[in-house]
Image (cartoon, rainbow, N blue to C red; front, side, top):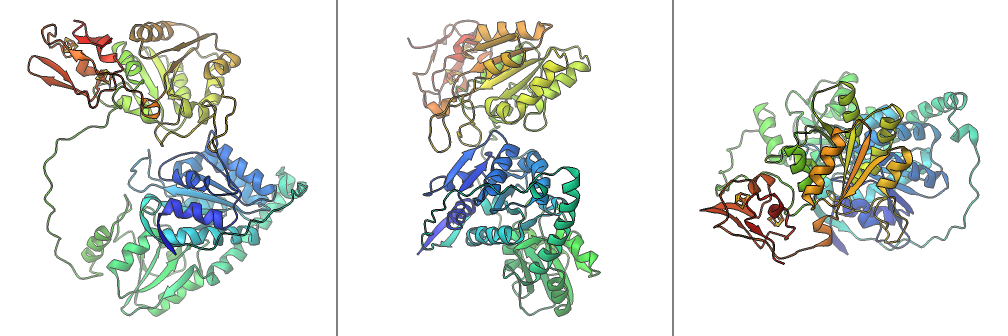
Length: 581
Ligand code: SF4
Ligand code: SF4
């Protein structure tokens, strides 16, 4: 039996087959669906953690407790979890620990384009990289075996193209339901307590382990030479292998499933068979530099660009320009109709809109954060003036305020992002005598990645009801005295509250609270516009709500798109927009 699966679905299926019992992660494109799919398998326990470091620590704990564990996150998430990763590399894991980490070449949905293969080398752990969904399924099992054989965490790296593209996966027999009696926790302080004296000993173990892994890399069946004719030997891994196979059909290949440590002898073997070695890899010249260190001449970055993801056409174009393959005529240009450019904007009726419009009206300098509300930076709202990374906004606004700028300032952070990494900078603001304003735009869900729960929602990924953490109570508990919870659709209240807080000399926090309209699917009748009353001032168009268009003599609202939130009516100075009663 076979089934078509995305890379993410196949990773989840592989985790089930490999007997992984605990999964933890933080949602982030392109990795999100791994944990969601895994949670549906019998015997699986899965949870969304408030951030990637917490997820990593949960995974480490499960592995130390003897279970096979999986942690999932996108590439930037590993920056957050790196602190734990670098030390679990020293302690080892007891049960298997697999970290599924998804890079995003071309930044389809990310704030930077980082090549996380460097994390494997820096943290001295194994990295595997599947090239299609079938390998994604199989490599989880390989990763579990490596983890338990060598007592090491294993990173399974994917990229967006692999995570989201679909191909055929062979279905396997259901894994036997192994009932394991709870075992005693293995007490081994010299291995698991990384005080300097123990860590120095483990450092030697890690080095020995790397040597053994380098030997394993030479013999593992996931690294292999595919004999071919021609003069060219291509080294490739992951989805780049698929592109390279199409562009160099005659070449001899070294297909790498394990990208760290790399197999020196296999690389030398390939070089001995061909006249010219070519590395096809996206982003950084990670494999290429390794080949150069072996003293083997190689073509890589001088041929293929180091920015943005590849495609078969892109690899072919650059290979042909370098004379590695014959030039082919450009394919006929696809005729596409000229469609108007549609800038990204907040959803119709989004509860964040009144907050950003108020911030614009009050000319507040806004330090923003990562989430769908980052669209508040886009015109016509244009109300976010920095966005660095998850949870940065509160520390950023404190720094800006310490620099004593003239403007009113505020941090704007979403609820899920607040739980991810907003709490520590909130405490920092208080404990260092700051007086900034923090606005939590709380839509009661992790909206951007597809409505995952977080500590404020009151339910878990497995559907269990749990206590929910109150953001305003938490702020009061850490020392904020000026705290308000507001309904964002009460625009006068929004304006007055933000004006009051940003003029205040004390630290303050506003929770603008209303559920994401896409999640609760709330829809009321659309307002109508009285064109006799409308004086075409254009104020309502400046809120940037897509159902509204300019028409002769005024404005029209498309009832198919409008969810009837009524915000546009509250900004019309002529009261020309009528909300049905
Ligand atoms: S009522 Fe107005 S602001 Fe609300 S969704 Fe409809 S057009 Fe947009
Ligand atoms: S805000 Fe009111 S008066 Fe101004 S264009 Fe819109 S509907 Fe007309």
